[in-house]
Amino acid sequence: MSDKLQRVLQQIDAINQEDPNQEQVDGNSVAKEFIYGQRMSSCLAEHWPEASEHLKIAVRAQHVKRWAIARSSYPEGKVGYLTWRKDLGKLHAKTAHDIMIEHGYGQDDAEQTASIIRKEKLKSNPESQTLEDVACLVFLSYHFAPFAAKHDDEKVISIVQKTWRKMSEKGHEIALSLTLPAHLAKIVERALSGK
Image 1 (cartoon, helix red, strand yellow):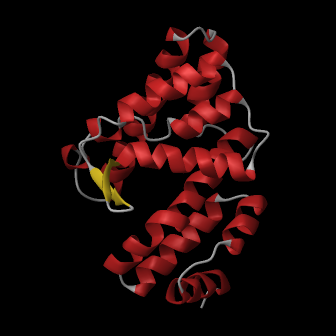
Image 2: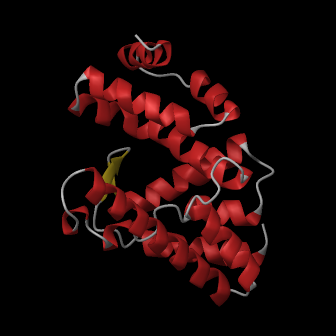
């Protein structure tokens, strides 16, 4: 790992450790977006070890400073939600861009990373697609069970189907290899069979 890359990742981690939202991990309270960034990087390293520095930074910065824009500051409903998500994407991209410039990356490198985070050209840019795959895999591995516990099966099936449509073939293969609790595995099976 280059010194520049290491410094950028460390700064992203330092920002994410300021997240006031906490998650319990092995009995300890950890900043939610910090642990999310670690999980994203671990998933990328495991399944896409040849990833570029742009992608490594994009994956770690996927939720950088997420708590800075509250969902409650946008209207209820789908339009409000999508606007919030788009504005978050811009914040994450700009933050990563600025950190990269600060640590000696050129404008083109910083913009390439920002473009991946904004998920531009999702189906034609393999790096944007990989970021989407990693986010979906981290969701299935760590957030699917708590999400499913709060919603009825039909809503969960719909979310799995939407998640599946966003993923590449490689993402599908990895997702199918995950070990899920039996009831969640059945929901995934139902979602993918369309029943």
